Length: 370
Ligand SMILES: *Cc1c(COP(=O)(O)O)cnc(C)c1O
Image (cartoon, rainbow, N blue to C red; front, top):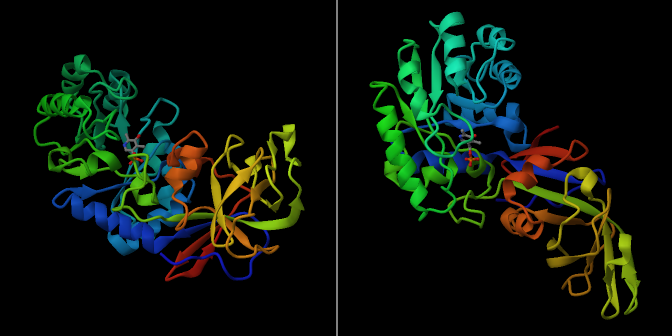
């Protein structure tokens, strides 16, 4: 992946989204799951990276034809975004329908994922001829129909095109829950013969052939986030978060930094104030480092709304005003920054705020800005 840090740009925090890396991750997953279809989960605006651009890129370049969103209204927007790139794409809506949203499904040709007997009945009454997916709960106790409801659901005679379930512990490959859920899924899915099956998101897709069935549903791994909460060499970074240095100063030993004066210099040091804060979705709890001046430099003090201070004393190259510090990307793994914020890459990405500039890169060049 090329480093998009240099070049003129407005002094604003920016997320650069490398579309070539997005496609490389898609191909890696598709190859790992050969024989199964590779769908793309683009819920939550493709984890904050922009569902329309991401879905179009995967449709045009990789032939992706199946997408998952959480809400019907997101599905409607996605349908419009895919009007030319993939007009016949299947768009599954994970949260399923209710009486108020059913018309959105019909109007935009969205496929509901049915999670309860109630949703299944609604569908049987109002849209029995349209295809639907069934989410079966195999032990996560989050979304999906319990095993006890399956007889009643199968009796409704719905036109199911997918039965799916979701793994609770796939980020820990050796966890016994994975195999327990897989067996439960196999048994439950057998009650819907001839219907395609899907069990795995990013982590499950990389667990082993027995977890892949007919379709995998990755999200995070497409976006360069390891589902195993630590960097994974198979997944290349996609998003790079940078922000400009807006002020530099020297501080004497004993001087403090930021709100609450929680950090104080243990030696004479050089500090760089960078234009990134919790107002941009960068957690106030952040600790850890940002890459600037040729090395990772530690965060000094509390992150405030618009600003964060870095201790650049040990940077091998002098740091200048306007230079950009990388908070995650090719030099600093998003999983490491997330861990230093007490969270995971998924949350860090999806929280990135509206104030951030988003730029899409192809061949290392800016293809679009948003
Ligand atoms: C979010 C989600 C996915 C994608 O999960 P990743 O870990 O990001 O790959 C797949 N399936 C369901 C049901 C989901 O909710």
